[in-house]
Length: 185
Image (cartoon, rainbow, N blue to C red; front, side, top):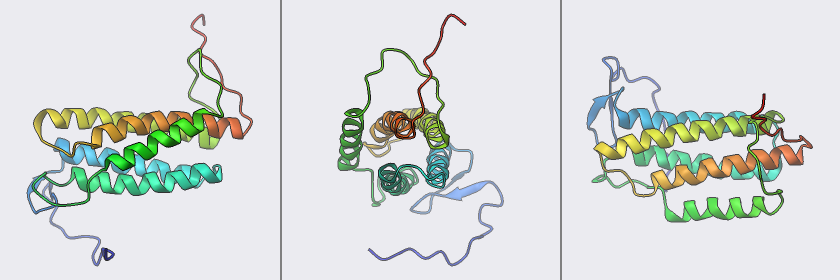
C-alpha cells in the first residue's frame, strides 16, 4: 500500500463548520460520526503521551500497534459503509484479547475496586481507559442512527479492558502499590 502524502495542512473547506467524510459527503463537524472519530483521535493522542513517559518496552510496543488500529478505526468511522476502506478487523480484537490474557497472568486477581492512580505511565493508562469508554459511548449513540463497521464497538470495549490491565501491569512493573477504594471514608 502506498503512503498517503499530506500536501497541504489547511484547505479552507471546513471554515463554515462542515467537513467531508471519506467518499466526499459533507457533514457538520458537530455530527455524531465526526464526534465519534474525534474521540478516537483524542484517545490516540493520549496513547502518544503515554509513550513519551518511558513506559515498559512491552507496553510501548503494544501501544504502537493500538495507535495504528485506531487510525484504521478513524477511517472506518469516517466512511459510510458503501465506501471501501480498511475496517477494524476481528483479528485486531483477538490480538487485544490475547494481550489481556497474557498480562493477567502476572497480576493478582482483584477482589476490590482500585483507585485510578499509579506512576505516570500507569495513571495515563487509566486516563486513556476513560477516553476509550467515552468513545465507546459515542459509538453506541452513532449506531442508533447509522450503520458502522461491525467491529468498531467490540474493539473499543476490549481496548478499555486492556488499558485497565496495562495500567495495573505498568504500575506493578514500576513497583507502585495499588490503592483500594475505601467506601467507609
